[in-house]
Length: 278
Image (tube, rainbow, N blue to C red):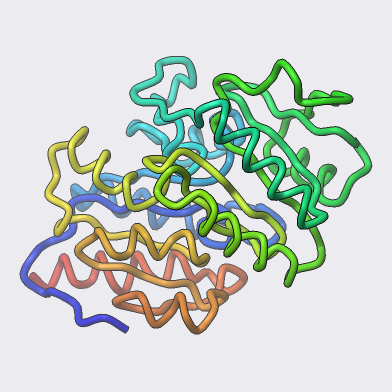
């Protein structure tokens, strides 16, 4: 774990969603809701970031009374809670979309495409499509080809239950794209490829600017390798108990898993108690 800086009080918490804020069954627990309300009562702002599209985070807005911008597609689209007012957007260039699709197919992974609003797949019965639909609460558009859909692409996803193939594809995509795209696994079976400014490290910088809060007064919490990018930019970072050892080593603190109220525990122990003590 990294060494915490005890000098700066937290003024903003940025939370990952899947594997962090919600359980494995995508449930937002009452204790998690209560901990966010407690943050607000203490004068601490709360925001979420996810690889999900904007519509896929709609289910969080009312229960958590979210009033800060949501960073969808890992920051590919930053949008107000009305889900219509876009604050910032970072789409992949068409040439990069074509290149990434080919790399994913070469690794024998399935391909999904997300534009600013819609989700496109080639096979409704492909692995994880049904679960993704259940998670984001809207259906994909099934197409024979992605031709004609390569503009305004916020995210390209490689999907497979061959987890080693996904890992290899991540490495090869990173090497092939360099600083022209951000490629990181948001789940062991999902490889998310977005604009280079659409990563969670950039989300911290964007939220810092939008809300006028210095990065050293921001706390971040997550569970996957793509969350390490925001850990590095924030004052304190918290890894979930269900995160890999590598992700846990990258964080200031480690909490319980998302099946054991790890998010709420982290807010209570590492944010609220330390705020009260200071």
